[in-house]
Amino acid sequence: MFTDKVELSDLRQGKVDPEYFDLLGRVLQIQSDCEIGGPHLYIDRMLPEAPLRLDRLVIARTATEEIDHFRKFAKLCGDVGVDTTFILERHNNQRYLEAFRGLITTWEDFAVFGFLIDRVGRYQLEEFQNCTYAPLAAVVDHPSRVMDEEAGHIDYGTTRTAELASVGGEQKERIQKSVDYWYVTALDMFGNTSSKRAERYRYWGLKRRTNAQARAEFIAEVDPIITKMGLTIPDKNIGRKYL
Amino acid sequence: MNDPVPFTESLDVFLQEVVRAMHAAVTQGIRIMDSDPRGADKVIEDCKQTLAVIMAGHVQEWIAP
Image 1 (cartoon, rainbow over the protein chains, first blue to last red):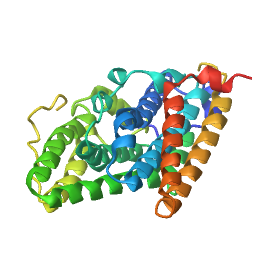
Image 2: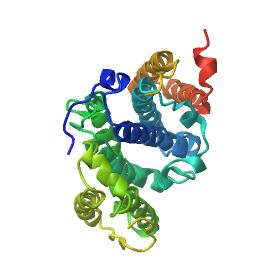
Image 3: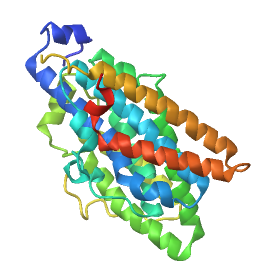
């Protein structure tokens, strides 16, 4: 396992293995895509249509924070010669992860997106904590504004989901339907259990957990929350694309 | 390694300023939403327009000298 700390100057001086450089550029580009992918999903409909004025303001703040996260990852990319500007404008259907394709059109989906998908986002960011590329680790190592803001997005989504579930009746059915959809999407975001590339990320110290480990930890975290909300934990296999 | 993308610094500075301004606007909007709901709505509308510009992604236009 590779454990050296790599600085930007090491990359510029060609001191790292080409595979390290390729994997770093790839993961930085994917992370940039994920950061800006969220606002592209929900701004058009949710910013004007959220139920309360406070919700609309929180959505504006959330999108602002995601743009700031994009900025930080775009900077890391740009410094190593990877252009991410096209990511800002590209169509949702071209997003790297399926979770960011399409459009969020209901308040239930927006709430559950924060509850589950932003939480997967936190897991993705945790992979980079204390990683071998020092400038990347610096963005997410404690204390990290990015991690704090993501935690805020998750809390907001979790609180709204719980509120909607507590209403009962048809409202509860609608939020269960959203949980059913996003839960499976979230599990798929961790990738294939047998991914060879994921192992190379770990070898080079760019990620910490296997895909299966991260997914299992996520399940252990969210299943009790779903149960506490009075909702049903969706089937973990139906509709899955990456097992 | 490839050379750094030429406009990396200027894009970073531009977006940082946009984020700072929007954060301040939203904070103000939350502060006044009970006493001045129309003012808060104006903040939301301004944010909507700014977000539309950023997500349209015409980076070269933003950072042109």
